[in-house]
Structures are given as C-alpha cells and as structure tokens.
Length: 510
Image (cartoon, one colour):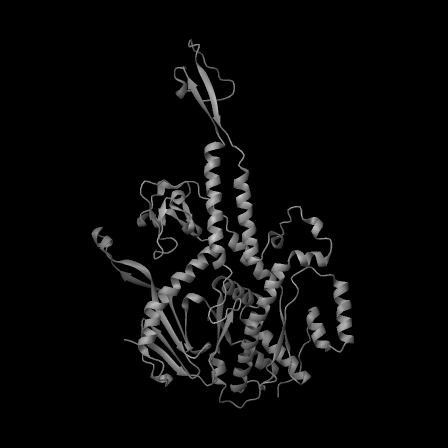
C-alpha cells in the first residue's frame, strides 16, 4: 500500500510529500481548526462519556461539560487541559473541586448574525452575456445548479465555514451523466440542459480536511489539491480490546471507519482508502475544479482571517468572570446564621415562626452573608462585551437587542451609522465571497461547454452577483430608485433582478 501518483505525470508531485501531508500535517491542522469549530458550536458532552478519561462525575453539579470550558482556569473547572489533548481532553486536577461554571457563547450568535447579514436573503446571478437570449438561459442554468445543491442553504453553509475557519474551498464535481455526454453530439432542449446541470455537485470542503499543494513561486495558485478525512460506513467491524477480553466479552462491534485521501489535479484524480488506491481517472476540463474563498482577505497566506480566532481570548475572559460571579453569588446570596449559647442550634432549621429558648443570657444569633454590590465586576464584564463588539463588528443591536437605544434609530441614515462596523465588514465579505461564486459559475459553465451540453464563450460566462440589502427597506423608495436607474440606461433585466423579479426562459438551446 502507498501512494502511486504516476497518473498525474508531474515530477514535482512526490509521494513522500503527500504521505507527510496525510500523516503529520493533517493532524496538526485538524487540532487547530477543530478548536475554532468547537468554540463556535460550544458542543456539549455528557460527563458519563468522559468518565474514563479521569473526570469525576461527582465533581460537577451538571451532567455535561461544554467545549468552551477548555479556556477556563483549573480553579473553576477542576480540570487540567493540554494543548495536545483537544477540547474535551482535560484531566481532573489534583485537590481542586469543580465550581460553578457559566458559559455564555458570544461567539456563536455573532457568527450567525454576520452570516444572516451576508446571505440572509436570496442572492441573484445576473448574466453579462452579450446576447439577451443567452443571458436568460445562463441565469436559468446557474439557478438550477445552486438550487440542486441546497439553494440559500449552500451559501449560508459556505459563509459559516468561512467565518469559522477563515476560508472555505468548493470542489465542482460533475456527475456521471455529464461525463457520459462528452462524446455525444445530441442537441439538447433547454429542459435537458437544466437536467444535466442539476447533476453537477458543489462540495464544500471544511478546513480540517484540506491539504492544498501550492505553487512554490505563487502561494495563490493551487497545483494539486489533496483532502484527507475519515468516512463512516454503514457497516460494522468487529474488534477486541484488552478490557473486553479481560471481562470476557469477546469481540465488540463498532461502525466501520475508513481513512479517505483524494488527490486532484487539472488533468487527473485519485481516491485512496486506508492508503490503498480504489479509483482513479483523467479529467478532460483542463483546469483544477476547486475554488478557494477567503473569508476576509489576508495577504501572503492561503488562509483568510477567521472571525472566531480573535474572539477566543475575550470569550475566555468573559466566561471566567461570569463563572467567578456565579461562585460569589452562590456563597453570598443565601443568608447564614451563627448561633451562640443555644443548645442544639445546629439541628434546628431556620424557618418562619420558629422560636429558640435558652437560659443563657449571653446567647446570640448573628446573621451574615447576602449579596453585596460589586460595581467594578459589572463594569469589567461590560467592557469585555464592548471589546467583543469592536473586534467582531457585530453589536447586540444586530440581534435585536436595543437596550434603550431607540432614539438612535429614527432614520435609515442613523441606523446605518449605528451598524457601520457590521455593514463595512459585510461589504468586505461580499467581495471575497462574490469573487468565489463568480469562479464557481465560470467553472460550471465551462464544464457544460466542454461536455458538449451547453455552448458558451468566455464572455458568456461572466456574471454579476447582486446581494440584497440586509437592512429593512421602504418598498416605495426602492421602486423610485429602480425607475431612476432605468432612466439612466440600466438594463431592464438587471433592474427587475435587483427588485427580486425573474423572467422565464422558453427558448430551445441551439
């Protein structure tokens, strides 16, 4: 077993380097990117499932732990974490009891709000083909392709993966029907073209499985694309462990998992399972069918800027202070009593109407405890939240939390100024994601052209992507603006597209 890369006919593609990517590099990047995803999702794990790792179920008042506890100090969680053991790999710390743990996932709702601002409404693809009938046909084809791959859900998934990891890759996978039509000279109707277009798959590749081999002289160019991941099959594999043999249980059935490695270039592709070649073939397109999209552009790096990574230290500080406040409230919010000179006082509950009797004239009952005001604590937590607002550009106002700021929202201009940070960041993302979507559409149309399904030129493959405004809009003002654009000479189809209207295609594809 091993990598046999002869089909690629590339002297610079070395099997040893690919094996290093799969065995070592994939583990390194998976550890980094998995933490980013865990901080976004804040996944819960039952205490019983991790009891064998050294955690004591009795140490926690709750039956679960959360991913963001990874960044809390041991004095709160009672767990000692290591950078190499993962988010849920903590061990019970010696002589430290678990205290009140409070997790407020400020990262998750900020990422989701940013995605809603970018892809909360359907986007439109406007063809820039020179001929009008061609424009309508191209738009119908692109609409069919994206609808078959999830529609608006595809765009939202792309934005979530990009926001969390800093980038997202999309692999264009033509179906078998598309490959079968390459050598056919049959003329298709418009409905036949749409049917084959729907067979084209758009696969979003998450960062932990992406292992691109970049050009040594140009980091922006991907020479060969490698992805490595573990795929669960609908089969069971029997195995035995030392513990099962010790208990006399024999073999244990588990779901079968296979390590999959895919190597794709502009001319060929291969698929390995557990480093054994299972399929390979040549690609007739002449280009690498992978589109790389950076979340926010970062010069000199393949990865873009992640929205999660800069928020992690502030999120840890917020969760730490919230947990400290919860511990303080636990000790101070309940009143306690100290009885002196009263026999059996410790066995008598404190309740309304109860009386104590003693012959000791020096007997006393003292009350202590109760919550005390701590303005510095509240101010510190508020400043942490403001810091997260500045770093992310997403304020609570985006999520509908007004907090007595109604006076600032008396006009559309005032609303835009209030959301300036969010809107400017969204505009930056519109460019990066828009350029990525343009490359995807160009690849889809070029594949259909080379498969003799739908003929297009380079000019026919140019499109413009219209992102609707995420802010509430006045319908009458929008219609007046459309009339002014039409008067200035903007094509009617584009004006209608911006308003959300579409035209149907009835012509036959020549």
